[in-house]
View 1 (spheres, helix red, strand yellow):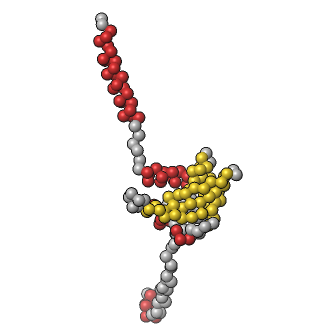
View 2 (view 1 turned 180 degrees about the vertical axis):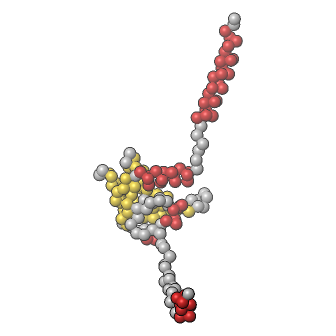
View 3 (view 1 turned 90 degrees about the vertical axis):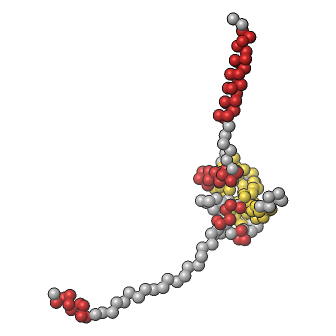
Length: 162
């Protein structure tokens, strides 16, 4: 039996195994917005809270796409180390009043205890801003309902006589 006949079969099998492994191990990549939302949710659910300060709110515009990005810049201290971070709050505009965020505004920051540089100030379910972030509409006075029913003796007397 000729051993050289087995080489093409082995090469074909190895190539098929490598291609199969590459296809099966490939992850389905999620969009950047979904990854950021998952990060915020994880930090809001399991992060530690510490005091921080909002430094600035930056409104940047991308030159290529023309989309506007709103960044909330803040600082916080963990174990004697000062961190300065920013959070993209473009998709969280309905939860935040950008004009009330000013230099030195105290805020609570949630951070990952295993990676203190990973932090948030606001998410869909949690807000660390000390001022009310959602402006509620003014309540209008409720109109009082007149519950006084005129007394009709004819109805009362007919009920008591029977």
